[in-house]
Length: 126
Image (cartoon, rainbow, N blue to C red):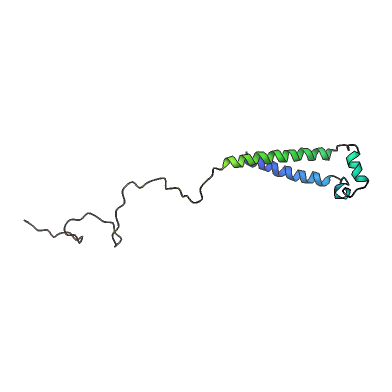
């Protein structure tokens, strides 16, 4: 739904730009600020007739603003705030307890005999 609305927004923006560029200039602007007939016509004159391009500009502009507002709400609700620093722990824990490692790199195994790790010699009768 988001991608569809975003596509409509982009197409509407292109259409809005084309419609604005097709319109003729009104002749006012900054030139009317200095005075002259153009300023009094703008203030005291009657309304000009609304053309198809003017109505299309208003419709496309309104559609653009509404779509931009809806997409901004949709994008802000889609993302939950996350911590950049915090790393999530692995989902599965090891099934057995880890064995301590010896300096040689082998895991400690239970042995019988002396403390050096070598098995005791078989001593019959003792």
